[in-house]
Length: 375
Length: 212
Image (cartoon, rainbow over all chains, first blue to last red; front, side):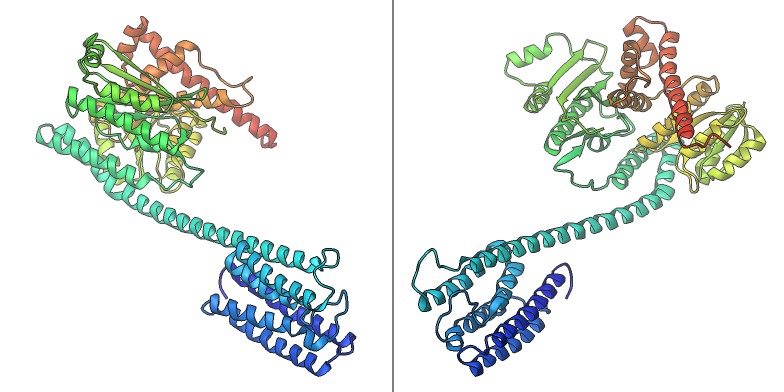
C-alpha cells in the first residue's frame, strides 16, 4: 500500500470485519432464523470473501474493475440469499448481510469517486428494495425501508468525494515537492554560475571597454551574455497563484548593456495574460528603438505601480518623432509600431501616451489597471 | 581617501582595487568575506567601502547595516549584479549611499566612487525605481500617519531619474538648477534611511532589546 489511498482501503477492511461480526451477532440473536445451517454457511462465505478482499485491495495492481465487479456480484449474491435463511418476512429486520453490503459500495466510491460510489449504492439499494418487494407487502411508500438506501448513498458519495479530494491533495503536494527540489537545484547552479562564469564575463566586459576597439565589442557581447545568463539562473518557476504573473520578471529579460530596466522591489502583479501582453508591447517598443536609433542605442525601461495602475515607460534618446508624423502615418493607413502598442494596451483597458519632440528622444508610457495587490 | 573593497571573487576584487589605486585612492584593505570585512574595518577605519552584496558568509545587507554603526561611519557604495533588487533596497535603507551594477564601465565606476566620496547619493535609474517603489509601498500601507512621504517635486525627479535622464536633462526639463535636482534626490534617500532607523529603534524597544 502506498500513497494517500492506503489508509482508505485499510478503513474499508476494518469496516468489513466489524460488519461481519455484526452480521454474525444478528444471526446468533435471532437463533439462526429459519435455516441456521444455511445462515452460518452464508456467514462463513462472507468471512472468506472478506479475507480475500482485504488481501486483494491492499495491492495496487489488483485494484480495478474486475475486482470491483466481482466484489459487487458476491455482495449481491449474499444479500439475495437472505430469503433462503430468514424464511418468512419480518418487518424491520435486516438482511443476512447486515451492514456488510456497504463494503462494496465504499470500495467503489474510493476507487472511482462520488459518482461511481452513487452507482454502487443504487445497485445495492435496488437489490435490497427488490427483496422487500418480493417478500413483503408490495410497493408501498410508507413501509419501504428507505433508511438503508439513504445511508448507502451517503456513504458511497461522501467517501468517494473525500477519496478524490485526498488524491488531488496528494498530487498537489507531490508537485510542490518537485518544484521545491527543482528550485533548490536551480539555486545551487545559480550559486556556481555566479561564483565563476558571471564574474569572468563581467570582467571581460569591463576590461574590453577599457581596451577599446575590437575588444570593446567583445566586451559588449560578453556583457549581454552575462545579463542573459543571469536572468536565466535567476528566473524561478513562480508558485501558480491563480494565473497571476510578476511583470518585473518578464521585463528584466530585456535588460542588456544598452537597455536599463528599473523596477520596484515588490512584485508588479498582473493576470498572466495581461502581463504577457504588456511585456510584448515593451518588446515592440524596444525593437522600434533598435530600428530607428541603432541596435546599441541606449534605452530605459521603467516600471512602477501607483494607486492600482501599473505604468511602464520605454524611453530612448534618439532623434524623436517629428510632430504630426504619427497622425500622418495613421491617416495614410500605415499604422506604425506606436499604433500596434496602443492596440495591445487598449485591449487591456489601459492607455498609451507618446511623448516626443524632434531631437529629444521618445517616451512611450503604457498604463494598465492592476488588480489591487495584497500588501 | 581611505577605501576598502569587499568582494568574494579575487579576480574582480583585485581589478577594482587596481582601478581605485590608479585613480589615486588609498586602498587600505581588500577582503572577500563579510565577517572579515567588519573586523578589518574596525582596525583600518575606511572612509569609503565598495561592497559586493553577495558574500559567502554574511549577506551584504547585514554588512552594510553593521558598517553604518561603525565610528566614524564609512560611506558605502554597493556593487551588485542585476536582479537583486530586494537586497539592494535593504542595503540602501540600511545606510549605503549608492548602487552600481557590476557591469558598469570603469569610467562609470570611478565617477560613482568620486560622488560617494563627496557625500552625494549615486542614483542610478535602477535605484530610483527601487526607492520610488518603496515610498509607494509605505504609502499603501494601513498606517500612513508616520511613514515618510515624497513631495510632488521629489516624485517627479525620481521618475525622471528612473527613466534614465541625467541630472542636467532633468534640471532643463523642470527648470531647476543642477544642485536642486541633486538635493531632491539626496532628500528622498535621507528620509528613507531616517525612517528605517526609527523603525529599527521602535522594533528594538518593542522587543525590549534596548536594555543592553
